[in-house]
Image (cartoon, rainbow, N blue to C red; front, side, top):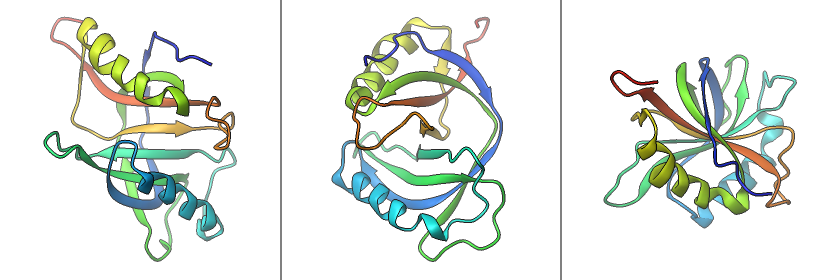
Length: 160
């Protein structure tokens, strides 16, 4: 599968994710380990929706170091008790640029968004939580299975 080169802008409502958080860099082995740890601890999560939506949340990017906050987690419908060592991350309602991609194409997708799509669009990236969405069609053992990248955006003045 190759990535779709035409993203779409949608509005996503506020949602809550519970999972494991780490300060990381792109492509870090620590991110893979974070997902493995989450998978081992899934039974500890409560109030999971039927759909089983998983997210890789990203925020607080430091351009100098390339580091960012990352959470491997699952969407929850409510938060009662948070398992030891896990965090809660609430993502506010936002307009997002959405691109379908795969693990094998992920870095190329980000490059396309930043170097081609955004500079040639009527949108600008916002300093807010962005994320990778892993739905039912995603299989972690298949680097070509589909996933989505969500980038927070707003229209440029006078555009859309």
